[in-house]
Length: 453
Image (cartoon, rainbow, N blue to C red; front, side, top):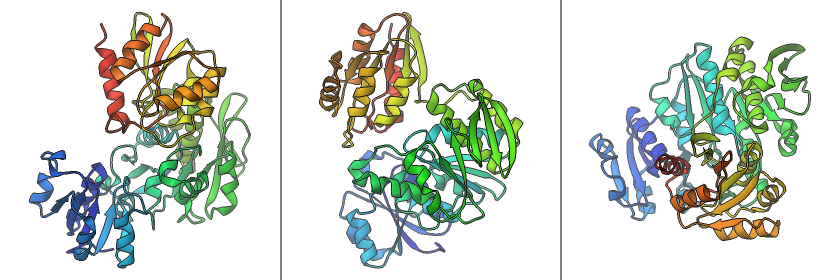
């Protein structure tokens, strides 16, 4: 779509909305910006956009703005069934997401990753592989750097690695990565998507526009994902840490192996990967499959796997104080992610749980904690504190301490922890009851821990 002199309503003024407005301005559009928050919530963050011709609207009825616009761009936080979206479609006005807008205007080779967990680690690791191969690489999307910001600067020879959420996949139309990976599917975001079946269908949309020239990377160990192979038009490559694969990446005799069209390439020993836990081995296999599918040399992939130390807010060691290791896993925003963090612990651990209610069943996590003697105490906070406590008690785990804030939780965890053990922040919940996002929560945790005397 040509945007010159078109009036485009951008709904949602978080990072992706602001980036979308800048991109639209760059292509000659007249952005009309709307957010339900009041203007003072943004300070001077939107001043430059206003000076460059954007219209700003806050807190009013957005439906009235449709009268004067040619198309609508929604931020990921705006559901596809929101009143503004329904009204626009009834009027015949095109509605796309920020991801779709950016994809239609960027240059470069696009690789994309989705899944319930592991997206950020895998995207960052894959980006490092391409950087180490000498390619100019952008890692963007749900990772916190909007794809629209990349579209302003990318060139045809660049590589663009995109972390994609189910929220973003709701509104795609032409989004087509040359390599796309689906890492795993476990319960998450049911407060928005309703059922697991709908959630899985949204995740599968990452392959929707691929052709036989493209590659879909699938987790063979995930029963839901492995069944998708017959519904995908692109070539398929699998990854597995428990089975051999004909085409893809797997572990054989303790080594990571890449197989493709009868060719076999050893990459490295699986125990040479620095990031801990079986889930991170899966992330490494997925990144290996994606990189190898685009022809990256095995020595480059090997070096990256052997040197990559992980990402911020994901099983991140913050500090050791009085023999206690404090670990920031604020990115543990759902049950499955926190289960993986629990399984990565090697010393007696106090875990901090709780946050925003996404209508999650905490039973699997409670059962894992009750069965895993490594977790000695649980400190619960936020909207879901009582739900988590109830689930833990039903599973037979009684060492539960409530806290009224994250700082209170850290102080109580310190008192409960033993020398040689851990304090693990892995909430199994989103952060919106107390923080702006998981990054904000993780940064506050690190500040509190760093301030302990």
